[in-house]
Image 1 (cartoon, chains in turn purple, cyan):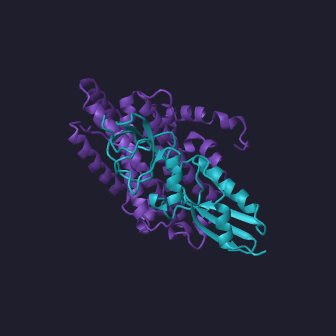
Image 2 (cartoon, chains in turn cyan, brown):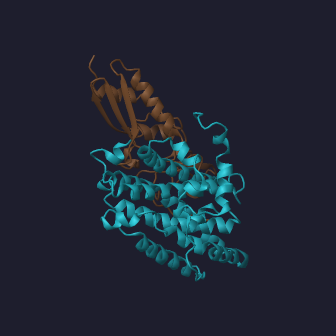
Image 3 (cartoon, rainbow over the protein chains, first blue to last red):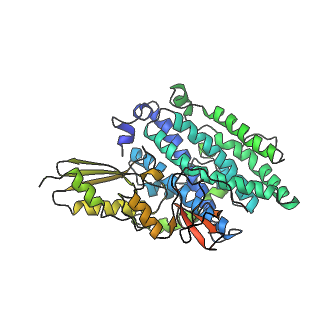
Length: 266
Length: 162
């Protein structure tokens, strides 16, 4: 597996010691995003508003965790650690997920709006990695893209359904957009040293261009649905390990079984 | 005894998917087989990255290879260099999935779903997600049965009607 980083088939960005930490940080941030949101989605299992949504969100949770796993495998191969230790054995400050994703689920409207804003961002991020000269990492991004497409389909269908359901649904969606917006802008906070990858022409478009693309995509759809886009500054910090107490609470629960015996094989 | 690639493929045909009564070779999960002396290297293609069956498949493949005379080392890995698509299913796989009660699209999920019980295409999508990551739920308006349909990754499909 270390061949991903140092083998003859490894992309230059992985082999070059100058760009490798930035690539590692990019992969780790994406893995943390998927794990944390996957865990939040899994909290709906058994509580979804209807059985279809329950099954769907549980499946999406399973897929996000599967994506986290395969991304952690890349980081673990480089670091020489066990993937469970990466997923369950780190302190909150070591996580690089966007803060938006650690927030509690709130109501169904917030869950859907958060999922939709993230799915749109993930689509832009994966498209950039898939189109960049990143070898195995680009191939992996292409694989994930094909699965994420269904997630966006689900969140977009619910966004539309709730918005058009009547005054209560629309008001809840609008409130959720306003609540999520500043931290959604934080999804595109630069991961550590990502500019090194961009300057070496190993990643394009750059995160700020990805953010602009996301902004245009999201605004167009919200306008189509007659929803207002808030004016707010980005709330960042997640990519630098500055989190809210919500992450510590989430990790406390998510890691409780693993912590009973970190050496157990599952 | 010298190992042949053909012999390895034959052995892999004994390995069934844990969630479907179909050999992994018929499902198109085997990407490549290479033999170097006593070492066999097999690369597999996952349908869905998060599929919990992947570890089981990998272990089954390893165990099967190690039972072959002349195999001392078996390296089994999943590769993401090539996507899994419906075109990787053999006709045998299609027939077995149909006998198992699963509807299987010809080329795209967007095609009308054919009911595996009555053959009608008067069906509606109920949920793009189902009991496993590779299945979607439909309903047959003619024989009034719920239908499970094989769902490939990355295909587009219409939004639910309701």
